[in-house]
Image (cartoon, rainbow, N blue to C red; front, side, top):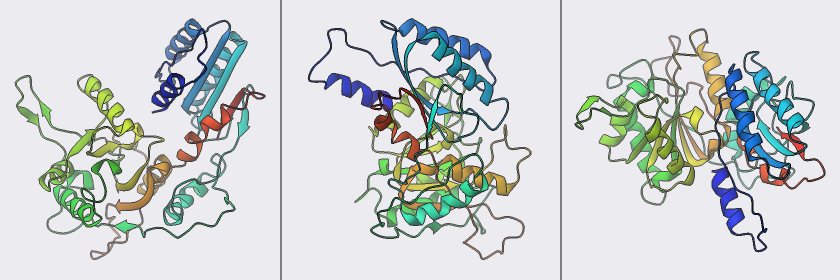
Length: 357
């Protein structure tokens, strides 16, 4: 999305430079991967022009988990040493262990989330207040409290599976709620995200002949059975990588009018008017996590996705009463307040190296 906006800005420049710059998108995994640091440095040094280089880093992670932070910091330090004319901006959800080459700039004013949504986010931020800044008061009263959060129940005879993603009835219940809200009529399908942490989410998998050999997750089948056009963004693997890249670009630009069901790690910084949250676990990372921790992760990982209507589908715990529909579970992210303000920071030419928090 940022790449597309930058390309549009270059093409719309009324006074083009005789040696115009170009925009390149690169994706690197610095999570305990020194080889990717070397690859990134080589790639960026090759793109340096007349000693100048402008870099925007999204989803930087300098502190917290020990195996994640050092490689990010090493990359920044070495890049600053290698390119004297470097202009570097980084967006990070955490504010600990920032490399000394970067100047911190906390950006904590909520720009679009309704107060009703913010109240679901702030308890998770407070849980990690030593590393994540809480929201600050904008000084401008909100025009209203926003729509009440809707909570659906993954419980009852028609419901199956431990998690909502494994339940076709949950898909149909979500579809009914979306239709009630006017999705497909006054709202576009592209205005909706259905998000989960679950690593079990998948679309239909077909063989070379087009025969489905592994069906889509039950919740996806339930949504489609109700007539909703659905795009599924599941965990990346060799088989689905090309399709996933195409679908991610389509979702980022909101090109196709269809509802997106996704592993939320792919959609940092993107927003939708309506966000549905399905509780779930990532079988690769959450083996030692409690349900309470998973709930906190969900809230932090999704902050800027919901601007208007939040719908939550929690998983009943053993202590949950059979008739309850108000189990506590929410989603949102602190990411939007960082990503959205990067263009402002990019005009700060007196302080070219800074990190947006």
